[in-house]
Amino acid sequence: MVERSWQRCAASHHVDPAQGWAAHILSGAEFRHLSGRSAPLMRAALPEMRRLFDLVHPLGLLVLLADPDAMLLARCADDAQSAHCRRMGLQQGAIWDEAVAGTNGVGTCVRDGDPIFLGQGEHWRFCLSLLASFAAPIFDAQGQMVGALNLAAFHGDSSRHAAPLLMDTLTQAGRRIEDQLFRNRYEGRKILLLDTADGVSAPLVAVDEGGQVVGATRAARTLMHWTDEMIREQPNLLSALEGDDSPSFRKAEESVIRSALAATQGNVTRAARGLGISRATFYRKMRMLGIE
Image (cartoon, rainbow, N blue to C red; front, side):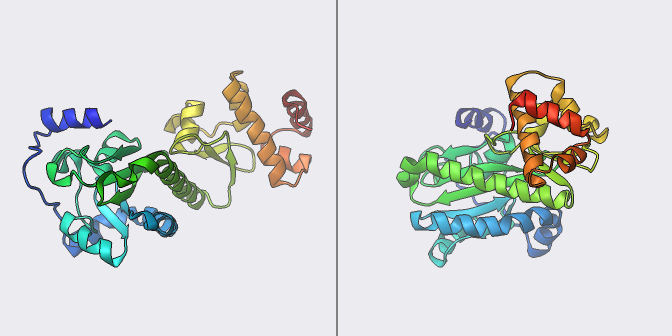
């Protein structure tokens, strides 16, 4: 990702790495106008940002939240960090789009839609060379990227030794925000996990009382090969899973059956009704999957 971003900075963005740069910061009125579209994200993310800051603050890291245009929406930092943030433009309303800032955690993350770690010397601009940055994209209830969560430090490579741990912690925080966005959007619906989360999105689906799918996260859409149009047609979840005998689909089907049983405290009749299938079919699937 870093190499691709550097190539874009040179060939497409025409950013001079040696040129001094300061982030453009929106006025209060401009920020309020543009940040309004990210209100659901901010409500879901702020508690998670505070929890994450408590974990990483002893390592000298701060926490940032950006929208899909790389505009900073919120920050968790202590007083000592705040002074550095003002000098570097790490504050509400600052624009960190890769096209103007060069390779950077937030801007490159939202550009590529993937997690990224940048250590000392990996930012495109020389003036950012001592900044360390970890960033992970956040996806909404429709599988669209709505922003990025970022950990930043001013002490260069001092966090590189913990990079895998910090990236995993950041990714899990992003998934929890996605989970909250999904549950807020489909409040009152049954939420099922199709498989173990592996990456920045968890494979969650929302189903109605008849077992029809009414919503799916980015990971679930990828697993099931669902488009927006297919979800609008509200496919039956178990019928969709039966259409493929691959190990991942069988694992997803088992996860759905176990989740339904857990949600009804083992009541097979209620679990079958919630998935839109008969009790006999539910028992057949249990036997087929080896579920007692």
